[in-house]
Amino acid sequence: MILVGDFFQLPPIEKRSEEKKQESLLKTKQGRFAYESNAWLRLNPLVCYISEQHRQDDEEFLNLLLAIRHNTVSEEHQEQLQSRYVQNGNFPENITKLFSHNLDVDRVNDVKLLKIEEKSFKFEMQSSGSSSLVAALKKDVYHRRF
Image (cartoon, rainbow, N blue to C red):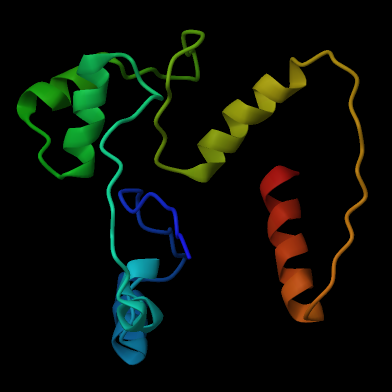
């Protein structure tokens, strides 16, 4: 079995107070990431790291992203980030955008989607499995996109 993921991503955002989060983590003895779970520890997988990336060709920006991932952000990196800060959504075209909240990502994506003038298609979903799980998945998808 091969498991693939990016474990350098930010932790999931929880809508609970920090005290409740810590209390929950202590009770379950599990963290917020897959690799912190009891199942992951029992699995004890052989971990391989992909050392090449093909999504960025701007070496300076790539170094900044790696510094963020490794928590080694320097003053120079902070200045680089600050120089790229854009207010009020006046983003230059065709640049990578970093956001701290999904709401901001959704807003930018929705504006881009509205600019598409191609014919749209509608696909009907079919589901099976636990009705409560299916309902939760549908609710999450609907909430994220509409």
